[in-house]
Length: 443
Length: 77
Image: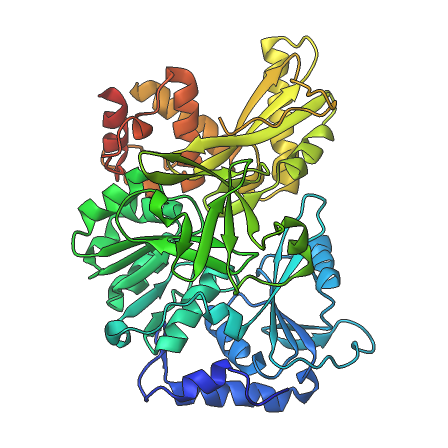
């Protein structure tokens, strides 16, 4: 591994001694973090230049292991703590990593781990689920991830960040990198429920917080964050509507409120700080380091040298080098507003749902002739999963029974956010000229 | 309105493996009622089906309710 590449350990070593990470009673300074990371490296020398998947439920342990592996392993893959069984196998085989590192230590995934792969810098692999269940892999390096991180400003060292996202997620990594690079304090809740978060953020005087619009609605309804001296509020991971932006401005008048648009796959994005939904139409063309445009089919186009060069993105590049984000937009009154995914992917409170995956599960239920899943816009979670099922001549009672069986079957096989929230039984589903069921826009 | 909301809350709790607290009062904090935020999102969508309106999207100037009483009041307006 080249010694010139930027590494997280190298970045942290430059900070002066004071707490950098706080979780519960633990406060870790840069030197404590460096020591803990080096201890992991010397305990597991076999991981040098290997592909390593990290799966932790303890956020602090995950971050220390991440510090150890960046600049040491050839590839890092961050896995959700709950990923298991076939989903775990699919993800691991799609990325080709050869070690699985958990709280209990690393285990080799094959009798003879794959040959050493040499890269100039550690590759950070992220996966998104595909329609067929085969995850798509996107690769970044620390340098490419840092291009989307705002450079440290004068006051950033006084920032006290709260971590509301899980750190294995792309949005969580952005927050972690932002704080580690700028040397601000990062406060990590010991658990991911709202009461633990609020308690930990209030107790540690968090003044900078990034969360999804759905999480923010939850925080506002909870009310406890009123005791946080918030001066920077960020919304990301979902479309920020005007209602949540206005409600936050009203509740936290001293805070700067920013909503972020980011494409996980492309590794690029931009932020909007004028308190209004969408972004100014004048940004189309060149905006900061990005070029923005709208495709003929109405999706946002982005051009940037920072765009990930993954194979899987190639089909979405236009001849003049723009990436089709597949996020639908419309312009009105001098603003560009986000409409949701043109591919039909549903975003339930920041969690992505492929309609096809849910439709396939629903079609397994006896009595279902066909199924159509689409987004239903919702003021609490952004969107919900709406299901229409085709079934023949059922009485009201039989339709109710069918809905119950569909719900039970989906609950057994899918996480809660993918289970259809609303179910309608219809006699017929609209079929397009090509014979496919028509995937209309969100309702 | 109150009866409709309480009936739907019970139905959604059953459908989403949640259990409502036994004694729901106007001052019950929504997030401690037993329904999670996904459950409340479904409640708003089901109420839109029943009533044909979603008061949360009727204005950009909304207050996110903290208690059950505040939630019901939004629908009684």
